Image 1: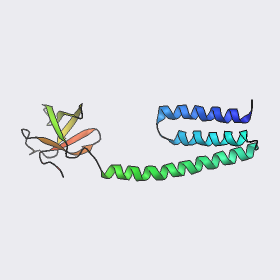
Image 2: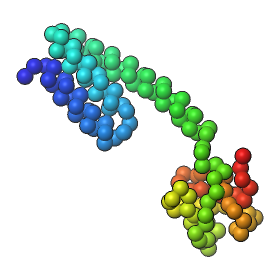
Image 3: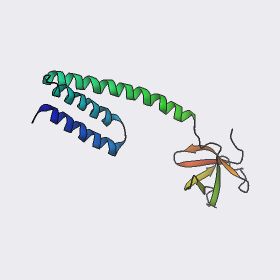
Image 4: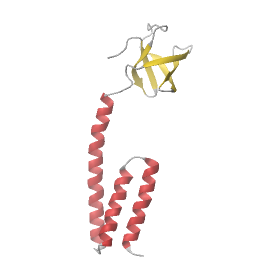
Length: 139
């Protein structure tokens, strides 16, 4: 079997693993393997295949890390859930609640203990997968 077949099979395997993980790092490695396969298909030696594949992988990961850093910072600064109303299903004895929001049930807690329970409640923030509620609609 020719070397380019192994490179392309490695690329397909990495692509399949990427579909399971969803991190995009394996996608970069699959592209790097495809570059190695293309270089092998063009008849270049194994050293050139490895060098170009490695350079593609390093450059791809550098670009991916750089773009993910800005996306994470933007996502942390803008939460579309803040200020949205919720519907309280039930209050628990410890002061927490079970609410519906976006068609799903969520655990929630009040931002302050003096927040009235009989007024419309809005999402003030999120702590993990729990909503923090307030009676003032945040702007």
